Length: 169
Image (cartoon, rainbow, N blue to C red; front, side):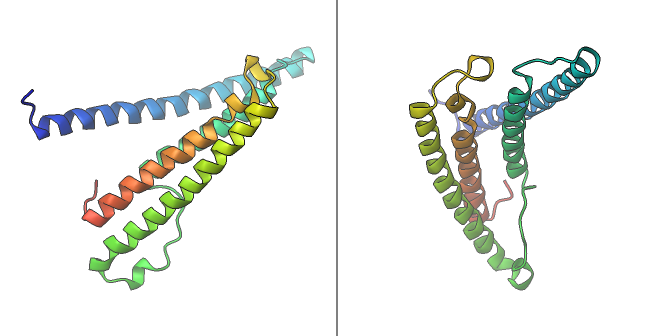
């Protein structure tokens, strides 16, 4: 009952650290699966003139999932694509407001994209519900879109708050 705020913060930091490692591990595992499946497909086609029927569609979705989750890792690490034309002309004390505004705008854009992705997945579920790759439907395979954009939204909001506080995070 009498846990200090520092203990709670420490527990939260550990939980976030575990989630970050899980996210990075998932990206690595999917990348490894793509490499193995691609080599297997090439080998089967070259030596046996056949292949795995669900291999190519699964590879397409693995590329999509790996790319979006990898973009989430890059966003978390601040290594996402950005164009920095203005910060060289802004005084150091104004940078936190500049970056806070940029991150907030990015969060709004990701929120709009997350909403559009939810509509897209709902439409896929309503009109394209037959099983495809490994018994999964298209809408299930496309759930990465709203999930990824919501993740980006959260990360940009956190970055905006930290920037406005003047905290490096």
